[in-house]
Length: 453
Ligand code: PMP
Image 1 (tube, rainbow, N blue to C red):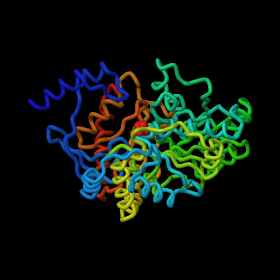
Image 2: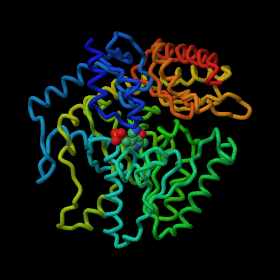
Image 3: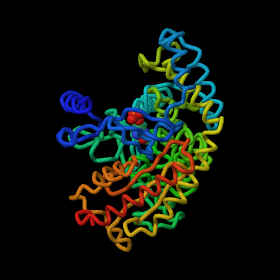
């Protein structure tokens, strides 16, 4: 009864992110009720392993009392402090300092946001101000990758290259340019890592030269493309792209909203390729999704240029909830957990996850397995030789998502027959084994579904 009335209330009043509103009304909401570790339970009592950590964010897993305590303590002591008027709070200052200590290179300056979209949005504003300060405001063109995702703000959705974020929204802006992704499984340059790197380097150079280097402000990249289908570039790819940026005096923004905070192993995925970008954007794992928060990491060079450029004038960028003390207190506790075993466990669990997914390669539907650490995907095809995608008309992703759910597994089923995995870093060996077993069961059921083959 209770759940029925919730479904009706949801249908009548709650707008869901990135959904077909009419499709959702027909389906009805599935209400999650509680969670512990890597297991979530819905209103009906059905339990599932959360193979996607919410939305790639609950890295620490559910039910950490110490995180709850940190939030409650901060709420009692000081639930809010603005950063305007040169005010601040202890947890925000401490978190900024701890993050700067752990960030690659000279990314020593932290601007806190509420999530990833406004972190990306903030970088665009900062970059414009940077070139304004340098006296080269004509450097105002931005480049990002096809299949890239950089948030859902108007500016970020334009940097994003997923058509559903553009159609009907008048996006992208004409100053937002795209180049092809490294997408190894379907790259015209082939699967050889060096060929993929050479091809990406060539297209980035060509795009910069086409626009004119004197007009190109920045290149945005996810170290591993997430929402585009977990596309993993070859080792050395990010470094090679960074070299091109340096050659043409273009800033590099590493969007680590998904990859940050242990998802690929280290705290930041840039370290996998030994790259120090000019900006890093993060969110999700920063607070493990317990409360909203994002963080922009800014290099010394950019910070000092902006600060000197403005002189005594205020730099007009700020949010009411920037550096929220409760979110910062949670961030500090989550960071402590990462460094007290979670990152280590994530590396072990990630190796088991990748080995388990590799073992699914013998399945007739599995065309590709890719990932790093606790961030992975399998790409389903009906013909492995021809790499034929599943027939879109049958809405296979929805069917696979539903079957996995019934089998006790939450995964991300992307529209193009790609299944995404980003489990909490706290997963035990048996959690990971269950993810693999339940995936295989789901794939077998899909194979027997005449509409999907
Ligand atoms: N950048 C990337 C790489 C992301 O994956 C996301 C969210 N999935 C965002 C930005 C936007 O973050 P948010 O949803 O917190 O606004």
